[in-house]
Image (cartoon, rainbow, N blue to C red; front, side, top):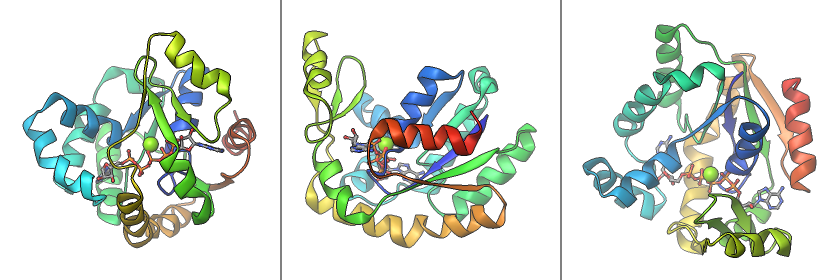
Amino acid sequence: MKIVFLGAPGSGKGTQAQRLVADFSMVQISTGDLLREAVAAGTELGRRAKQAMDAGELVSDEIVLGMIRDRLQKPDVDGGFILDGFPRNLSQAHSLESMLAELGKRLDAAVLLDVDFDILMKRLTGRRTCSKTGKLLNVYFSPQAELDACGAAGGELIQRADDNEETIGNRLDVYRQQTEPLIAYFEQAGLLRTVAGAGDMDAVYARIKGVLGL
Ligand code: AP5
Ligand code: MG
């Protein structure tokens, strides 16, 4: 299955993508993760992306499209993929359409994780990633046993550089202005599946599987 996860910062795209990857033979393609890896590795691409990411702005389409083009040509995408955080504006959506047509692939669905903006700030300021397992956790919402398991596995709980209130505010503005128009775009394409993204993480996952027929 080939899907796009659409939703505001903190809506749960990464969390729910990790679950689909664990249960089905799909790969997660997160442009945010790929960009953070490039920043951490200190590559030229990472240096060019860092300033925009720290400010909560979008990185240039040229950089992101190059990354996606490379990634979609790897053989592991044949079992299905989840595009997490891409496309992010209409121009990226049009480029994706032509890229997939060239590769002879078609999207099955665009899943919108719909969450009220007032709960996103708490999710984002509380987010931590386990350095050992990569699991997404939350100091407010994850069970204590899951938080403790990271340390027990020899990992540390890491906070993302852009998860501070000021940058989060800008990321939410950018989402409203540039990414929200994609909801209508995917609706017109007949691909939009909207899922209520608030509440228990397991319940959200069950709703996603429901709209995808999994
Ligand atoms: P990116 O990494 O994509 O960040 P984002 O879109 O801001 O989304 P997040 O990763 O913050 O949220 P998420 O929906 O994955 O939520 P999560 O599951 O972690 O992008 C970062 C930056 O890279 C951008 O600002 C931009 O600069 C650049 N970039 C990336 N893609 C780009 C593109 N295509 N073009 C241009 N630039 C690009 O959940 C959040 C927290 O909530 C976690 O702690 C989780 O445990 C918790 N949580 C999840 N679900 C629930 C629930 N149901 N109840 C309670 N807590 C929950
Ligand atoms: Mg994410």
